[in-house]
Image 1: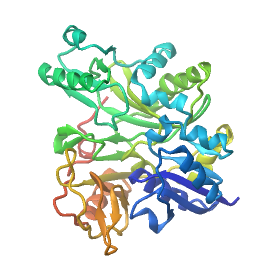
Image 2 (image 1 turned 180 degrees about the vertical axis):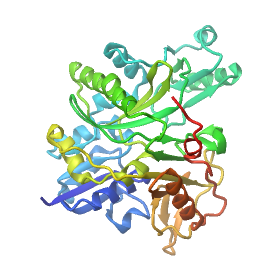
Image 3 (image 1 turned 135 degrees about the horizontal axis):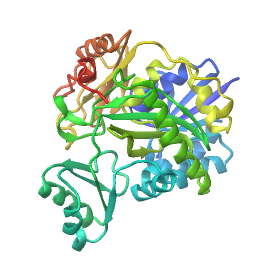
Image 4 (image 1 turned 180 degrees about the horizontal axis):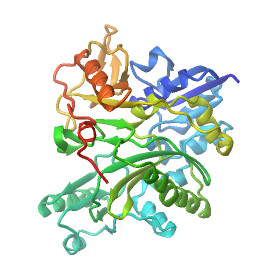
Length: 419
């Protein structure tokens, strides 16, 4: 089998997908749009507007893609996968209809209610006049979400009512409804599943670190690092997530006539009553993907192609390497506020260095071009060894003004997380 694959996106997740695909012997050619300074070493970069269905379809034709893999959520929510399928391309990624599981929090809540899936109690507020009464029904910890795509940055979790109110008022002023949710206790888990209609194939669970600073201090970000597997999460809990959460949701979406095809990401809190859903995403999560794919032994192209072509039920069981993987994000100065860009990076081509926000300047140097600039992956026989390798690799990279968390995976290593 000779497969030409086109990956859509420009971040660390896409670099990790391309590395995985490059290791699949059936994949003969790799293209990425738009890609970054790291992806050009293993794929051909193409300057395309990823939210333009016409441009993406035209590129797929130009490179004669056998499989198109869409990384980010925005093109999925806007129907780029639909346009590719209509043009005859095997596509990994859900329809716009199914991508509502991420694009609309209210839709996701409705699906979970129908499927009998545990999640936070929630209310949508679309009128500022109703805000205070609604806030009074929640607390002592408030969870306030922008009811749309906010790239992981539209959520405020706070025990300060005034802070919660300010964020809600700001969303409403910009014309967005607000979702208030009850706070879910327990450690968080990200479980990625390949889904094709009612067929669900779980990957290995990971944990993301959302806050910018060590010890979970500071504002939420798109994710500062992740590790897998989770030594504190029993296998039977992972199995429960599949049977109590992902399979019922997949079946409910089939029942509604918007079957999911692609990667369904369940973000969960594992509380006293078992798993409860915090959020769903309609694509591979960043940065967990970088850690999870580092341990995948099965051919990635084969798995994505089976999902895209309706053959997931026939895919041989996935095989995973023993040990652990850790990814540490190196972020630009002032991230997550207004990150500084254009700084020259040294050590960006070393082993385990995945590019997220990078480009080449006029002199051909690799420079920062985003908030999360690099994801540094370490693997080892256990979490301690994987952390050691990751941080050793972090030390060999220089980016002026950058910052990273020193404690990715540390609480799990020290036995401070339990369910």
